[in-house]
Length: 125
Image (cartoon, rainbow, N blue to C red; front, side):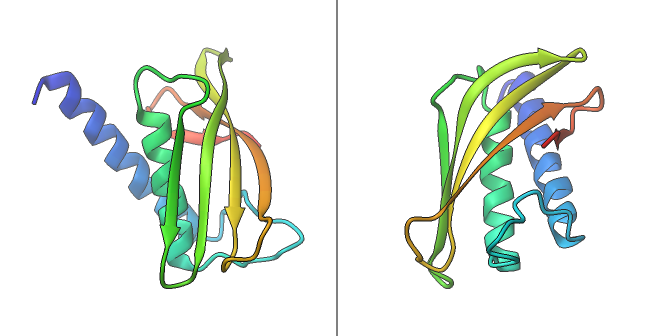
């Protein structure tokens, strides 16, 4: 692998660990009328898919990442709606479509994720 690829992979993995820890600490930006419907495994799969989407270079509007948990029948897709800069950070506006335990039609969330100066991706809501 090229050094840049290794750095990107390392950053993506670090982001997964950070996002998973945040999910486990109940820092969940996907709260709504459906409550806590995602299992810990669902949350992990969701945040791993978001980390892959944010880490992909170059970021392109329309790019999507999906996840699915056959044990809980929950699934989802995150799609880049906008790529922009805010406060010196690269940001992605994402649409998240989450289906809890196979219940249609699912829930839609729009969140902005920005890469901080330390390389972490954080939700700005």
